[in-house]
Length: 344
Ligand code: TXA
Ligand code: MG
Image (tube, rainbow, N blue to C red):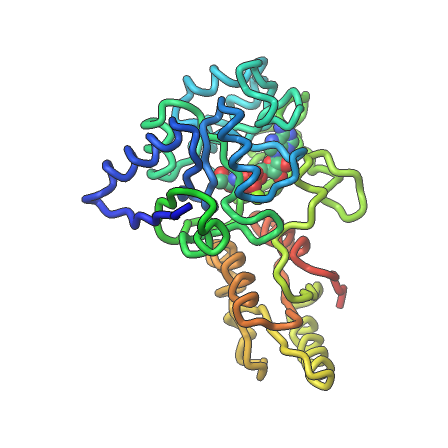
């Protein structure tokens, strides 16, 4: 299959959205940008389209997809028995980077929910995503547009790397703004539970609802509540070691490890921040941006992991961030990319 990439401009926007929406209605798969990462979209009520998505990604069948909506009316078509606190959260954070897991209506095919009675729903804020959903006139099922097990794509080039020859169209809207996937909030119970941390943080949610939990599955070794948690995600090809501790101690330890790995003739990559990059002599140092600019760090993370793949390093020695606010989401992605977390 030939994969067309359309770079979106003001001039071709409408026409390109029409083309994408037409393919979606014909049960084909189209990659498109959202404010978090690129999605691999298909008609939300079509088992055939859903099967094509799973195939293109090589995704395990028991991992459900989320439905993307372009209006609140679409929400009523797919979810039922929605709790009051959910509406409060929607009012505050939608459209935006948070997915609510809700009781599904029977029109949502079991291919989407992977046999569960719930469905994840997100109303993205990105203009292209909204336009595509509204033009298609139905919810769009979309996982991140990466091959299963690779970092989520934050630009069209990364989507093309993974999806070339597998899907007919990629809508190229440039680099995504947030760079990590949405917060996933299980919202069927009395209290919401964070299944996947994201830009909308624990602290943000706490400002709206009195009580919110963080899923036990987010801690290593415990039983996952969301199917997605049990898979090792975001894995770069190299073995990544994540060093956790005080800023200065971490940098010193990485310098020490760098010297040690060099003796073994390994090609070493270092993932750090603007504040520390000068300390390292290794050829392959990538800075995620300023340690203090978490938005910049989250935007750059997945692309940096893909860059290490291209550089062909054997080992990645990585600094980490504090688990606070969006830092919790960044840390979780780093932890899951890592072979080992080393407490310094
Ligand atoms: O930001 C995002 O959420 C991106 C963009 C494209 O919207 N999408 C995305 O989808 O990251 P995906 O499929 O890569 O991740 C969705 C996560 C998975 O970990 C999945 O297991 C979980 O949400 N999930 C989906 N439906 C669920 C359900 N009914 N119950 C529990 N977890 C669910
Ligand atoms: Mg994904």
